[in-house]
Length: 126
Image 1 (cartoon, rainbow, N blue to C red):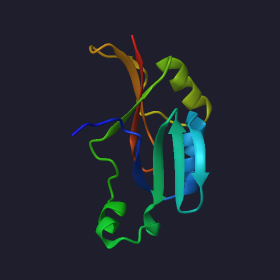
Image 2: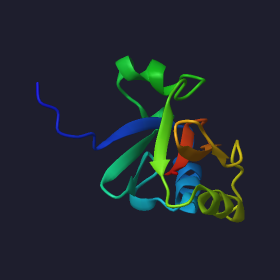
Image 3: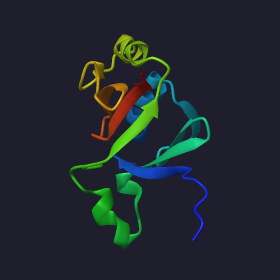
Image 4: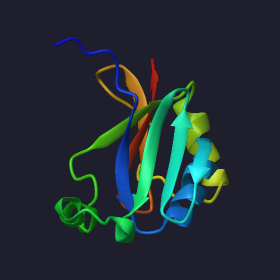
């Protein structure tokens, strides 16, 4: 099997409009949006958000309605400067979960949770 790339993933959310506001404030490029679905981009990578109440496939409804979204998943987003990204998030009215911090593996990072609890790690290589 030959793998080529990962182009994106899909997450269930309670409120597509609230999710759009959050990701736009972080600087994601906005794509198609309606009351059931939103797609955002960083370069070519996409995240598609589906309204959990709009899932009509019974095999996916349990996942769509799970209380804890993205448990154990961290979405890593490279930034030129983690401190500037953190300050920009705060200036746009968002509340990061952590302050920027240097880690032994060579990154400076901070974490912010989106309105549904998905964890975004903004990092810069040191």
